[in-house]
Image 1 (cartoon, rainbow, N blue to C red):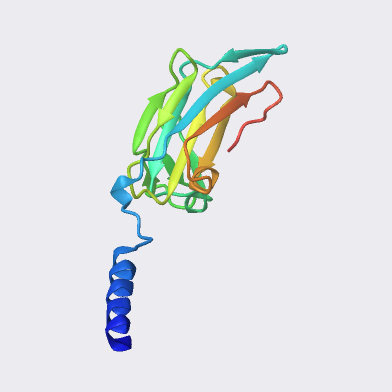
Image 2: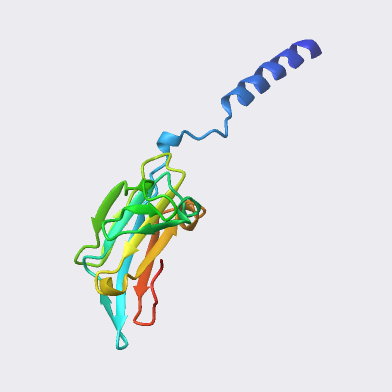
Length: 155
């Protein structure tokens, strides 16, 4: 009798243990959505920076471009070897509501986003974001970016 109970208990335990899994299918996870809201300030007023350029580079991170400079078309050029160029994976502009929404492809591990102010274009004001700014949160995010008259720009 005890042997039968032991056999039944072992069978039930293996059924429950095999049926349980902590593995979550990656395909079931919604892709990360990053919403950028871009503004500029002048004389104390905050205004939507419509038309700001957004350059997105997949599989590139900030440490990859330490010796690079950016051109207005988003091309990154190595300052030590001008034959080494990195081109944006996508290029877009901030819309009339001041918004740009980015949905990186699934599996994107490295991500670099450069936003170049339209209003302060002559001063080459831009801001850089990397995967570290987004992925550590693991959820959809809204980033509010303010270019101010006091900024000196990011080179």
